[in-house]
Image 1 (tube, rainbow, N blue to C red):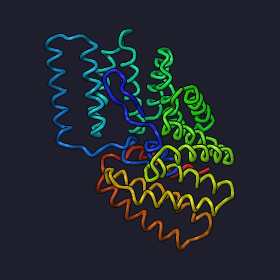
Image 2 (cartoon, rainbow, N blue to C red; image 1 turned 30 degrees about the horizontal axis):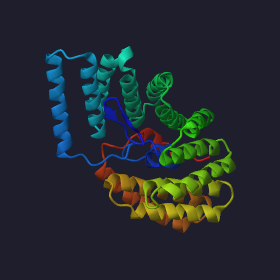
Image 3 (cartoon, rainbow, N blue to C red; image 1 turned 60 degrees about the horizontal axis):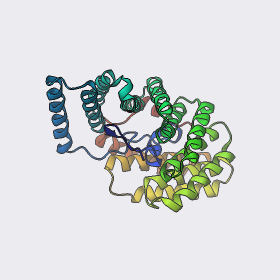
Image 4 (cartoon, rainbow, N blue to C red; image 1 turned 180 degrees about the horizontal axis):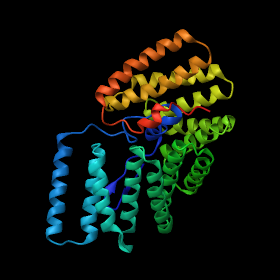
Length: 332
């Protein structure tokens, strides 16, 4: 969904990422905001190779654009490996070198990457600042695709900050951009509707949010894999909105479908799968408590405790926004 810009490829902002990024709202904070693959020896070797290329380019006094591009690639590699301090330093190098009229697209991309890093490490104010600067550049360049994506990312940041009216407006801008595209990505469109709906429901407008969830469901069922993180997110959001609009039975059915899919997923790093299951279980436990089903809620909480212990062992350095998690879910 994120496309190649200048010298790097960004990770998706679609429902798979939304599933993780809306953690405060639905206790869905995954190992990283991005669904990364497991780190391999090849990745570590690639880092060393990039550092060698940077050293060589600097010694040969190559252009700022070339060296800055290499620093940007290195920053992304570090970020993929969850080495946030090293990634932040590399992004800083790239931004200093790419701040020229000729490298505005790459500069915007570096700001986007640094903003995502700040978001992942619970620095929402800094994230919003970088992302808005990136957005302004892409708007000036007339890049609708990346303008839309940044609107949605900024909306997520605003949701974390409980600025729901602003998040609604930001996600609405993203939806407008999507509707103006000749070929809008299905996953991006689904994510935009879910983000917009989340902002609405947290303002007490859950009926309108359910309409967004239903639009997302129609697109997802037509164009996205049925057994995927995307569909876990869609079913979970729909279940939440059904519950909050008074259809408890339909809400529980949708949450059950989300949990069924989450439990059956394969092919992703175990920490990502564990966090997906935890997200559904936490929302389901909240539903069971609210509907006074104490025994079932206790069983669900026991499963949560078991998975949390596995999460801690498997992903001890990659949980982000821990402070937000400890505050509990943002339920309307």
